[in-house]
Image (cartoon, rainbow, N blue to C red; front, side, top):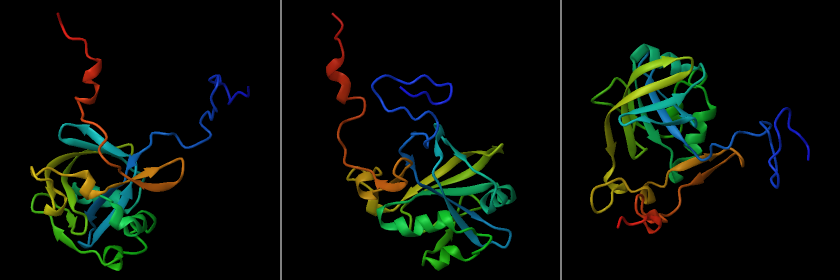
Length: 200
């Protein structure tokens, strides 16, 4: 069996070493919105993001217009690309605000100022987190969520966010494509109870 550098192959499997994109898939497609120095809204897609703590999120960012805006305002909003907004969200990931300062308007999207942080809310995304910058160093952004707001259209009967209604998309690094979140297939902290051993 062929070695991949100094890595020992795992028997019975295809071994990639690190020659392929790492499979920390799926990755949420988060949309980071900021104001620039002229108060123009800018939004970008980031795939390397996740929850960091109970009220914090973390995003890995390289240097570009969004990082300049973050240093200027100390705030941002996070929304989630969904099945309805695949093309617009992808465009936000490939078009730089330095080259296209009106890219939000170009796709027909609108913004409202966040009432809680110095950042825009993209109205067409039905779920938004309003965040303050906690730290930003070595390309790692940590933000504190001060408010989460959701459009009524994505709430269930109990008033909770329903991912089945939101239909967020995720980035598939292996296929280099976007995929939708599927149906609920089990209850968290419930599906595995059948393996629990009852105390005598």
